[in-house]
Image (cartoon, rainbow, N blue to C red; front, top):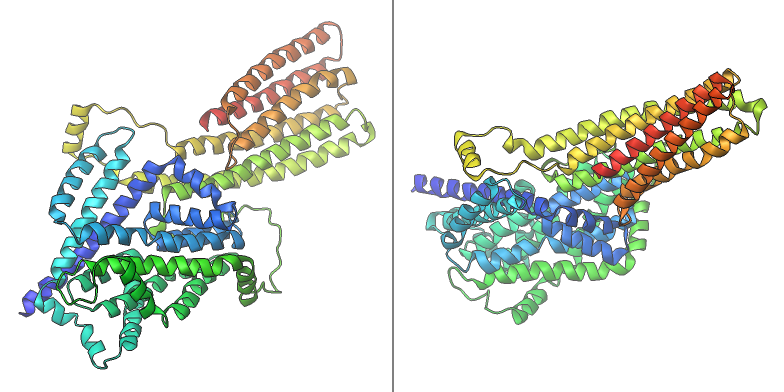
Length: 586
């Protein structure tokens, strides 16, 4: 009997682990297949509170974990991608989004023979996932879905034995007192503890459904456990926020307070809520019957209804809620914001919440800032260049200050390049780790199907952009040195030369603005054609200006001035080449 109980327990734990593995694989497949759509969805985070709720719901449905996404939100606020007020609506939405998996499990997982569904899904998913084609990520999704249902089957079968029910006899606790409220409160505590241990509210709620389905716990206790599991999902966000700034801590507190306040009003009204769910959804969860299919369905309905009502209550008071959180966690008087000369990548490692698409969005924000610094460097050069013929007495001082300023910016961008490249390479390594080594069977399959080579990933494109931006910062500093040299050697360009040079300099400024727009969350359409047009114009004008410089040399003008002019034209054109390279990479 003891051996059988131990084996049943191992079967249950194994089923839970397989369920979690299936969730992770399914989530990865969804994120990869969603691709740019997910990125565009997440860009709506900065919209109003209603858009924030919709974004939180959609992203959590894709990631399949409110625990993971809440950690991501904390990380985004810590990095400045979101404000505290903007994050509140997203947090409301993620609490609703996490209920979606419960509906799928309750409708499909407890109503059909899972072997009839899981094994075909795994077979089809495996075949699709090993073929290198555009939609191979769908195979990962199907594979994860299959493992999820097999894990659920092991969960339910492991709890279906008499010994397992005796071992996990939670109902005996409630039977000590014939009090439904006490049973609910005990269930809430158990659900909270279970979610903290499992580290996933979706997995713990599925486990609760399996317990109730096999009559290990009654419906009242299962409902309390669902409420406790909903609260337990905040733990990871709190832990991650401890390493973040004050806004990250406030965001985690938003999630905690939203769920605690919701639990405070919901627990006294839980029994009426259960009655309402019973009126809306078919079946009687209170009817004593082993494998009562109504219980998982009604638990999913309770979970969704609670989070929707809680969101409706809080949504009109987002600004007031933000002020309350700031009052509870005020800025420390001793903390003073100091501008640092060194770059620090404010990124919180999110453990199991690492997500390729979300990491890319996080990196894109920093790369956009990097492009902004390069654009500023070039703008400073352009301003100084245009002022030289007007303020000859201050020319040397202005160019010296320009060189010092651009050198500091160039060194800062060097640090950005190192940090961001390391981050993207690490993300790319995690994403492609399963493909690093191929078995003999994989090589045989590759030979049979003759798959097309991998297309360049977004990560690789961004790495190219980072390298090009760093080279541009070097070039900006170099042209400032050329300008300083021209002043020091008394080779300042005359007004006629400046008239020819100014439109050319402006074209590169226009190209830089185009690149900045391409790196923004909502780039303008038809930028490829504009980039090609600007590249051709800059090349044409470079040849024209260099020819003009050579003609002036032949006409007996100052050779040194004209050589500096030609060198400057060449270096500026190189900046245009880098802009075109970035535009192509994007």
